[in-house]
Image (cartoon, rainbow, N blue to C red; front, side, top):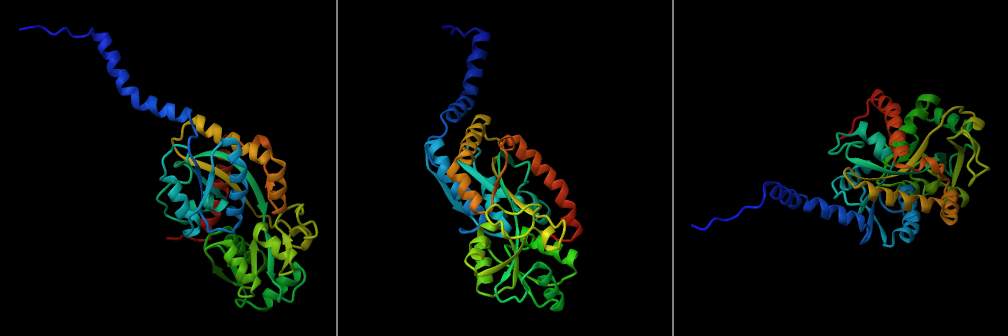
Length: 333
């Protein structure tokens, strides 16, 4: 019988290891070639709201850096958790970005029993911008300043209604805190998105809202609603005539929504670096800065636009807000 000469043991093991490594090598090769096709930003709310508007402004500019279209996909429902869940389940290849904010990547972790973990199932890409909220009302409310609004609400307990983007959303939690601080009582009306809630405020279907400037400022400028205060220590550059809560008589009532980009956990580091660079380029663009400023957005300093800064900020916000939410007894299904 003819003997078959086997390869030297060391050479054989080397060949076997090389074959096993082929899938990993191909993944690395794909990562190094990134991107080769359009990228999707999942916005977990319907079109027209604050998050959607910020996403569209950045996507338009990021295309120039990435060399491929950046597409917005709106996936609304369950206070953003449906869209964020969709992003969490996406392949970790850099072609699906989760655009979220304080509510989706902090508060929802304490409000819902989620099918994903807001920290463990995402890798941070960039901290984008933040914005305080505006305390606003429909035009027919007789009050012309914040103290007058509080007096009117106290005189009409449980009769007024406040529009929110859902139970546990930042407008809702801000409203609960507002009631606790001022001793007022009013009803909450949840909507599927900020734009829908604002439409009903303008139409007079709800009475008040604690809402982001992106949806409220255009209506304030148009004279369609009243603005009483901004929930920050300083006035908005985009609306310098609106007083701060300190100036309006509700000292220390500070609330802000902040925004960030995440990708599914396991996304290669060089892809995250590429996405972060494209994001930072967009945030440094004068045109983007102007458009965001007009919407009341304050861009984070460049040294805070890193994945590490977003991870640290998200962690600190979770440590701050989860105990508050749990103490309020809010748990959603």
